[in-house]
Image 1 (cartoon, rainbow, N blue to C red):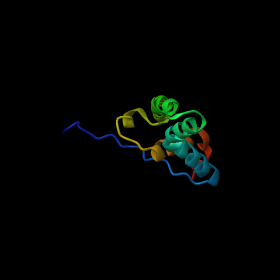
Image 2: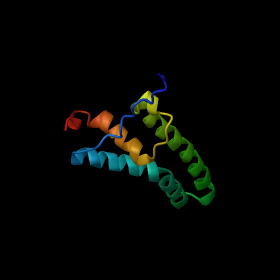
Image 3: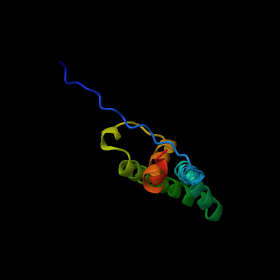
Image 4: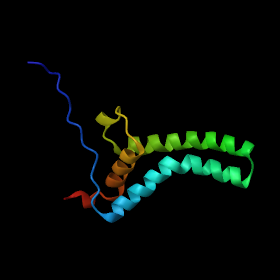
Length: 104
């Protein structure tokens, strides 16, 4: 008998309440468009040559924020898999804000 069993993966949680879906949507929009919006705001307020380093710095910071959110809520056996911003936002919202609402 082989001991090569694949561990069962915990599926991405479903969000049921409107509050949880709204939090997940806001977090997803922040993760997806935070970098671009900070670059555009810096370009509008200052200059193109200030906006480019701002864009690069924000890209690095958003990568760190994304990885911290992902590693804080996704189970350790599933961290090697790729997750998009919607998956990270759903996991984080379900585990941190809407844990009691998931009893459906």
